Length: 168
Image (cartoon, rainbow, N blue to C red; front, side, top):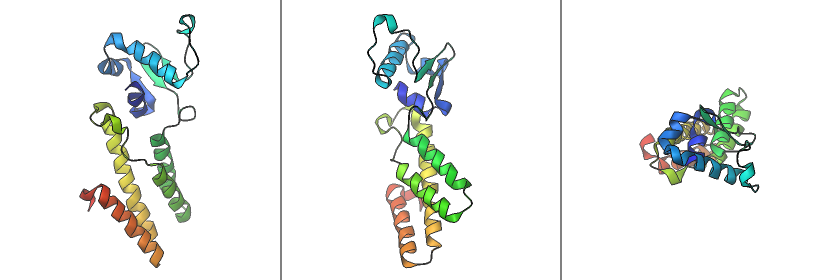
């Protein structure tokens, strides 16, 4: 739960207040230690338990998960590639980046925590971005005006309707 909350937070940061809402004060520290053990499975002895983690940073005000270069999260990569696509002025490059972003989108964000409030906003945001990606890519492919381009655009729209019929 702590990993998911950190991964779904802007900047991968939880304030102490946010973390306290997720855990009782007495359960937060063990959750931090478990997360460190999962991310950095090097054996820890009692003497070394207070050493700083290289991936989970804790201070009195916040808990911070390492950036994308240290811990790769597909949702972060999806958003980064999608942003690059939207900024690309070359149509071919834009289409290639949209295809790459589409490949990175793995469906609902953190599906095991479907009801958890801490990830609903990120899940909904990623889903909206994916819908926009499919619409943009279908539009680009339909501009080809050839049979394969039109068929590809139709397939993308069919995929979208199968997952989210409300977009019709």
